[in-house]
Structure formats: C-alpha cells, structure tokens
Length: 128
Image 1 (spheres, rainbow, N blue to C red):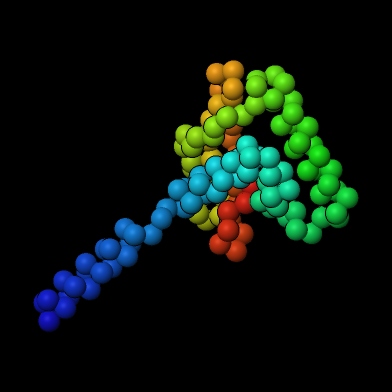
Image 2 (image 1 turned 30 degrees about the vertical axis):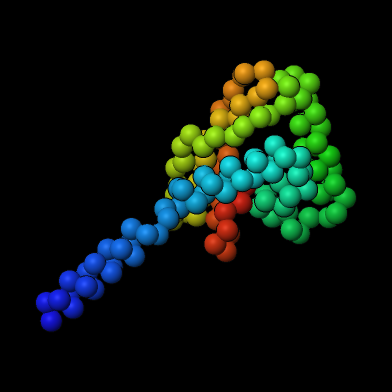
C-alpha cells in the first residue's frame, strides 16, 4: 500500500512538472507570430491575430498590405528585422491573457522592445 501511494505521488508530481506553464506557451506563440513577420509571411501573421477569422476579405487584405508596408519601412530605416527574442511574459490564467515582452533586433544593430498582448482562445494563444 505504501509503495502504491509513493508511486501515485510521484506520478502526480511528474504530471504537474511536465505541463508547460501558460507564460512559456504564450511567449513562444508570440515569438512564432513575429517570426512569421520576419519571414515575410504577412497573411499568416494576420491569421494569428484574435478575431480575424470572421473579418471581410477586403479588410484582411488591407491588414496584410499594412504589415508589408511596415516591413518595408523597417527595411529602409533599420536594414530589416533580423531576430526576435523572448524577454519575459506575464500571464493572467483567470482571464486567459498574457503580455509577452519581445526584443526585435534590426540589421543596423538597433533593438526595440515591444509588448505583445496575447489571448488564449480554445487552447490556442493569439495576438490581441
């Protein structure tokens, strides 16, 4: 009986430790979004924003065009975005939201820190 209790306790402990924390999942999702932007996948970047699955196609096209213009502007001003790094993340599990702090590294050696608000929707983290 004692061995069974120990095994159950260890199993519960292992289960609790093996689950990824919401902060880590949200931070990785935000980084993946900005990596899409970095790779020029503007349509996929927009698809990772919350509530964009129900917007009109014309509005989606405008959002994609805006992201392309932003990337072109960053190319002109800073020789493009080169890398995205996760700095920190704070999550509110009760509200299914998080703020992810990213550092964007540019080609001219400048860096910019940005906060990406994230929201969890049906188990998937999306940008607000």
